[in-house]
Image (cartoon, rainbow, N blue to C red; front, side):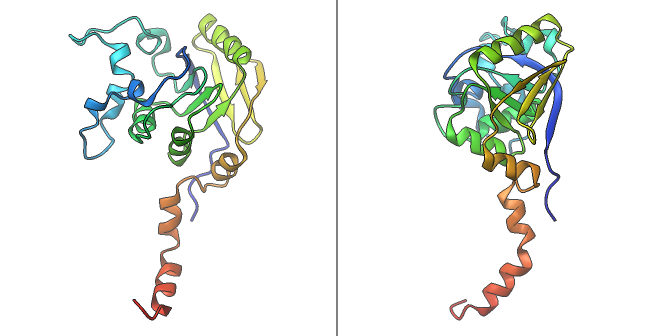
Length: 198
């Protein structure tokens, strides 16, 4: 049985400006000492969100107007740096369900799609306008329409790019390869039974 298809994600948006935001910035390495990913959300962007004494810095993710936002907007080459899976995992556990950026690092993109967290690309001008609309009214709903390659911010609809392989995987409920492998359990057993060396 396939996973639930993800054709669209709707929530409120938050703009985290900057290019080349790397995975160490998304989740500092010292927080990666964990057996599961469950507690990582609280450490997302920790070093840019908090002072050493734990008091919050001035950052969009600490702004009460954007509390609970689930669609993150950013700049170019988002998720670059090390290949740590912890970065998209931390974002997902923080509550982010889709990312709109100018471009993505390849491994971050793949890890995000495997979590069912769409990453779509838009132009710098589009993202600036989306950010302006969100800043004007943080309650404005943002819909990332994976099936139709658009992002709607309130009444404004922006054409964006959704990589075809990701669109197929998400909209057909085939975004988690481990789930697909488990789904094929019986076929794997039958094949293994026919192999003379097993």
